[in-house]
Length: 60
Image 1 (tube, rainbow, N blue to C red):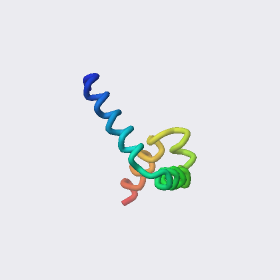
Image 2 (cartoon, rainbow, N blue to C red; image 1 turned 180 degrees about the vertical axis):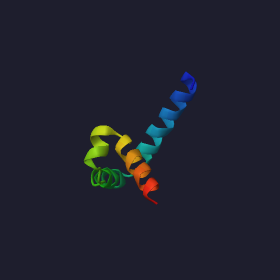
Image 3 (cartoon, rainbow, N blue to C red; image 1 turned 135 degrees about the horizontal axis):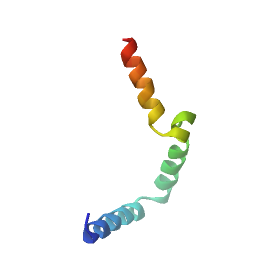
Image 4 (cartoon, rainbow, N blue to C red; image 1 turned 90 degrees about the vertical axis):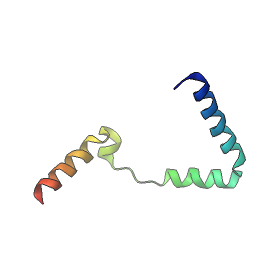
C-alpha cells in the first residue's frame, strides 16, 4: 500500500466517522463493548479455536 493509498483510506475513514451522528457513534461503541470474547481467545488468539475445530472435526 503506497502512502497516497493510505492517506486516502484514512481520510475516508475520518470523513465517514465525522458524518455519522454522535448518537450512532455512542451506540456502536456500546455494542462493541458488549461483544462476548472467550478468555482463551483473548489470551491466546485463534489457536484454541482452531484446535477445538480440529478436534470436533475428527470426532465426526
